[in-house]
Image 1 (cartoon, rainbow, N blue to C red):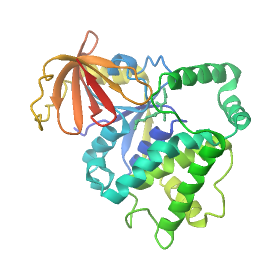
Image 2 (cartoon, helix red, strand yellow):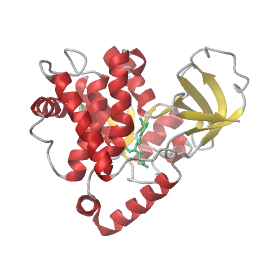
Image 3 (cartoon, rainbow, N blue to C red):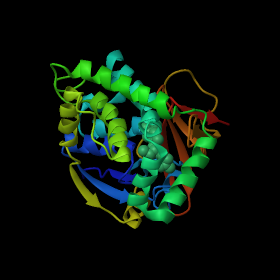
Image 4 (cartoon, rainbow, N blue to C red):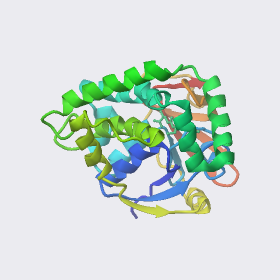
Length: 307
Ligand SMILES: N[C@@H](CCC(=O)N[C@@H](CS)C(=O)NCC(=O)O)C(=O)O
């Protein structure tokens, strides 16, 4: 049986857009379960144990938090090493870190508050906008990152566009002759900026504009819409897959009850038994009443594991 990859996401999520484009790149068939734009997320909280960011992917009784581990799963399922974050070279890693660090936050911080408000009102209505704004303000209050705003954020966007323009002169994609992880990672903050500002990219960056259109045209593969209950049934019917061998330094936390949380923003923790630890991934087992045991996967980088 081919494995079903379920993506818990919402349409406006840029990190989810990165993964949806990967599905398009490999023409994959996938299952979509739509989540609310802010917690609580009854479609996926019972599976993840409360991880608050989106997207989350699910294969049977294995739950994947963060696009680092989701991209690895997509790369494995689709035999697409160009999507695997563990296989990128230093050059691609630098673009990815920049795009998903300062640039991601600047994509929003560079948009004027009035424009942003207009975009949210159109998309979510008054009530939705109030709920969303309150949620994100609370999330950023607890964050350890302090995003740039206004002119400083516009400077970050401008510098990124200049760099991409240089890289893309004479080539179609950022690091290879075909799209790879770096392209999808660089695309999604620009997509966020374009959709939030309701303005196309600056046409003076002609190579970037053509590349952006090329990536957008990749599409999302074969998407099938599922109700959350179907994802729950899949989790209930499945057993977590065999664990990877824990590698690296022996770690006394294995077998212990831990909580795992992002260290930068959306720092809600998930608790369970630490069952596997590799240099790049940690897996927590959660005993749940409705589904039995679930394995929740996180990247090591950017996450803290506490006993
Ligand atoms: N490093 C994370 C970042 C994910 C992220 O920031 N997602 C945004 C939406 S695109 C988010 O969760 N925002 C808060 C929320 O949706 O509750 C990843 O790669 O998955």
